[in-house]
Structure formats: C-alpha cells, structure tokens
Amino acid sequence: MKIEIVAKKVKDIKADCEVVFVVAKKTKHKWVKDLAELNKQGYEGGDDEVISLSQKNKIYVGITSLETEDVRIGAGIAIKSLRKTKYKSAKLGLYHNGNESDGVSAISEGFLLGSYIFDKYKSKPGKLSLAKINISTESYQGTSEQKIAELKKAVKEAEVIAEAVNFTRDIVNTPPMDLDPVTFSGIAKEVAKKGELSVKVYGENYIKKEGMGAFLAVSKASAFPPQLIHLTYRGTGAKQKIVLVGKGLTYDTGGLSIKPSEAMLSMKMDMGGAGAILGVIKAVSELKLPVEVHAIIGATENVIGKDAYKPDDVLVAKNGKTIEVRNTDAEGRLVLADILVYAQEQKPDYIIDVATLTGACVVALGEYTAGVMGHSDELKESMKQAAKKSGELVAELPFNRYLPKLMKSEIADISNISSGRYGGAITAAIFLSNFIDKSNQKKWLHIDIAGPAYVKNEWAYNSYGATGAGVRMITEWLKDLK
Ligand code: BES
Ligand code: ZN
Ligand code: ZN
Image (spheres, rainbow, N blue to C red):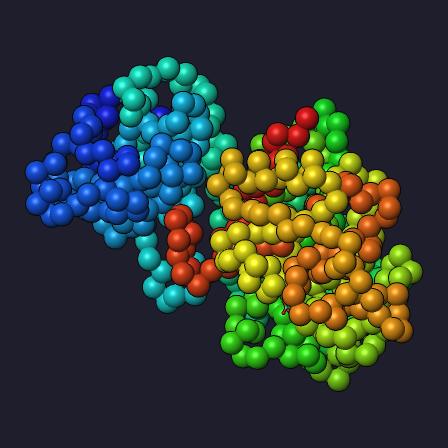
C-alpha cells in the first residue's frame, strides 16, 4: 500500500473512496457532506464508530479528538473497514493537532499498522485491494502550511516504523515449529545483511565457555542449541552507545514446572522482546539515526525432556552469582541475567531490556500497557514520554526497599522466584538488577511487555495476535536521544 501527499483540496483528488473522520461527534464540518444519510442511519460519529456509505463511496469514522493517537486509531479503524471492500484507492484530508507532520505520521502509521493481518498460514490468504492512499495537504482546520517536503518525509519515516512493527509482528506470530532458536538467528542474520549491520551468533560452546550457566540451563532440554545473537549498528556521528537486550524464548512450556494448557497457549510470543529489538535495530538503521545500537538476544526454548533443568538446581551466572531454581517457569530472567552481564561488557551509555517477563505485569497493568522499571527516574520518564508520543502505553512499577528481601534464597545468592505472592513484575525486575553492575544501575531500564505483546482480541490498529509492542516507543526514544 502506497501513501502519497497530494497538494490539492480533498474534493479535487481522484480516488475510489473518501475517508472522513468525524471529530468529537462534530458533524458540522465541510467534509461531512452526508449528514441526512448519516442521521437516517443513526450514525453519531462516536469513538471508533464506523459507517460505510457504499453508494457514496465514503467511509466515516468517529474519532475522540485531533490528538495524534486518536488520529492514528481513526486511520486504523478506517483501514479495517476498507479491507472488506474492493476500492483500490482512497483519499482523506489532513487531520492534525497543530503539527502537520505529526498528523501525517499518525495517519500513515494507522493505515499501515491497521492493514496488517497474519494470514500466511491460511490456504487462501486474503488480499488487500487498496493500493493507494492520498493524503491531502488541506487540513481539517482549513489551513495548509504547504511544507510538502516535510510531509513526505513524515510518510517515509512512518513507513519505516510501521514496516518494522509489522516485521516484528510476523516473527512473533510465527508458530514455534517454524521459529526455533536457530531459525531465529537466521532471521537476525538476514536483517543484518539487508541493513548493513554487523552480526555475531554464538552457540552452546561459547555460552558454556563464557560461564553463562543460567542461560545454558534453560536451554538444556531443547533440541536446538541456544543462540546468543548480537547485532550492531553504528550510525555516523554517534555520540551514545545503546545496548538493547531481548528475551528470546521461542517457546515457553514452563519447563518441569509446566504451565497449564490454557496458559501455555500463545507462548510462541515469548520472544516478543527479542522480536521487538530486532524491529528497532532494523528501523534505526533504515532511518540512519546518529547512534550506536547493539541488539543482543538470548534465544532458546523452555521445554521438558530428560536433560531439563530442575527446580532445586543451583546455577552459576556469568557474573559469578549463584541462583536457586525454585520454578523453571521463571526462565526469562535466567536467560536475561547472563545476557545482561554480557551486554555490559560493551560499556554502554544505556542498557534497555525488553521482555515478556511476567504474568504479574499483565495482572498489574492490564493487557494494553507495558511496565517500565529501573533505578533512574530520568530514564523512566524519557521512555514514558517516547511511549506517549509513539502511541504505546506504559506505566511505571516502582521498586522499594522491602521487595528485594522476597528474592532471598537459603542456599544460593538469590532465588529465581519471590517468596511472596504479590508484586511479581517488580520482583522479577529486582532479580535482573542483581546482574547489573553497581556502576550501571542508573543506565538500566527494564520493560515488561507481557501484556501488550500479544492480544487475543483486536484493538485500535492491532489485529489478533502480535502487536509489535516496544518497537515504536524505543525507536522514538532513540530518535529523541541527544
Ligand atoms: N513467559 C512468561 C510470562 C508471561 C505470562 C508472558 C503471560 C506473557 C503472558 C514467564 O516466563 C513466566 O512464565 N513467568 C512466570 C513467573 C512465575 C513462575 C514467578 C509467571 O508470570 O507466572
Ligand atoms: Zn516461563
Ligand atoms: Zn517466559
């Protein structure tokens, strides 16, 4: 689907169909020309309310306001409706909240993200007829700054970001039989090749040699070797070095502390963090951002078998700390412990890990919101702002002096689960912080995307399954980095 900026009034653009947003139920607007018909059909333009007037070749979508995210959602809702039609082209005006480029980005992202569905495994995949979307330079407010080059640049950027999100969605949605740790490192190599990134993939011997006893233990029962994947992008003029770390469990059965069937279902998404940072480094390299970004992934499977690691095992991580395994389903933190130690050897300015880490985070925040944790208020605040700008939802889960005590082990340096019942998303992050050097504590941020990475019902511009959570907010954060 191509998106184009057209320097004409909406009415002068030729297209098979016109999309009109009804903003805050205000039906008195020059673009709302079918009021009688809309009234007749009881259409009020409420939030997400969509109506297709096929005789008029028009689609009306209600949006809450002109805020960027509302516009993005409006475009997502519009494309979901257009998907059911045979229109080849559509046009609409420029909806923005004071900044035309942001409006164009939002419209473009909404269309591109909303057009995604995962139907590769259907014997008859659906086809989107819509090939072109024309965005007029005529704005809702009636003004037009005519900064066409800027608007075109905004479309390009939105395309890069949406493509990265859809790429992440594809890998997260792929069934575990087709996406194992080794095929995953193959995908990373492809990304590297296309984006002129450097990539190193380390297997079992290296992981053993480097003393990554926690990562190794989790991988033991798998038919596939664990893969430590390290991609590097070096932007020209880079002043900062950012290390992104991703949990890459291509499947999580829970291991011997096995998950109930219901909870196991959808655990193909347990590499959502790794998928997200792969999407980020792809976007960053295409946008040619002036930063140095490392994406470091621990890819493995948590399965059962005669070699499976056991509750009661004591593991030694790369930094020498010993970990008592009390639950093999708390495996993500074990993998991340070793990867975080490896990541700090790069001497980064910031280190951000992204993981589908805990069910507790979903309980705490709901399935739309990611949890942000760490020791630096400034860093958390900057990520919250980037998330807001990008349209992702995040909330901070605070550390305190009491929770770390719950991670004590009687026989090792630390337990892999909390002795308490509550605050599981935070205690998991506290576990991770044990593998961050004292000198790096304020450089580290943990993002738990267990909720938003994968959804069982469509919302806004997301369809069933993977959402690509994390990609937009981290790319935005990197864009704003000074
Ligand atoms: N991959 C899961 C977390 C998860 C749960 C992600 C739901 C997405 C949706 C993780 O490895 C896990 O199983 N965590 C356990 C930790 C517990 C054993 C302390 C959990 O959340 O139940
Ligand atoms: Zn688990
Ligand atoms: Zn897991």
